[in-house]
Image (cartoon, rainbow, N blue to C red; front, top):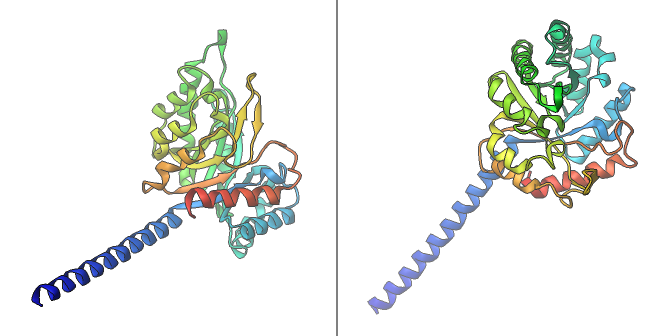
Amino acid sequence: MKELQAEVDRRNFLRTLAAAGACLFADAAAVRGADRAQRLHMGAQTNAWGVPIKDYSRLLEIAETLVRLGYGGFETNVASLSSQARRAADCRRDFEARHIQLIAPHTGAVLYDKDKWDAEIANLERIAGFTAEMGAAYLIVSGKEVPHPDSKLDLGAVRAKAEALNRLGAVVRKNGLRLCYHNHEAEFRDKPTEMSYLLTETDPSRVWLCFDVGHCYGFVDPAEFTAANFRRIAIFHLRDETRSPAGKVIYAEPGKGGINLKGIVAPLLLSDWEGWLEIEEEQYYPKPMPDPDKAMKEWREYLKQLTDV
């Protein structure tokens, strides 16, 4: 009888232990999910609706659409915001009232030409000033392609560009923003790549990356680049595509192209990385997509599958 009671007690203990383990596992999963939702922010570039958004009321309509689709922030070409520079504080209130964050303005600059540094940095500081007042957290800058004398990357120009980015990063930080450098194909086309020099010669405390996974695809593996450098990346521009044998870009639906989007987000999910995952649809650039709302809805659903956020 005692042996029978002992066996019953043992089984009850094991069931209790298993139930406790299941609860602990569920609690841990919930904590991970909550943590992930705090770290991974979902945003969109407004390119899908055309570039620039000339009518400010239209920009607000797009912001409302993005919120309805589950996005928390938007990035837009600086030309969509410049007309509102004098009423920047009102813009911030407009965005806050719609429960959406202005992530960053996106603009371009010639950064390798020292003769243009003063003018370029002054203009970018002006943009940083009024967009910070609008609530932006970052300034995204794309650089004009550096010279290639004799078809070779001009390393002097690359180093000048890196120095300009370091200077600009300090200026932008004074306005409360973080500088993000946005790549195009040129930064990955050469061997060694321009990007490899920019990573080593820019100050990580001043210059982050807005990593466009589409522009580097076909030159480097975006997932491998992310795994090696995600600590330098503050914003991702995500899309999916393949390349024809001639190298032509063929845009694809979310998850149906050749870009390893699961591999890109993997190190972000498994670390304490915090930043923005932005969708950038640009196959009709600068014109709007035929149905941008539908495209961005599909992308948001796919992001949910990828990240559970």
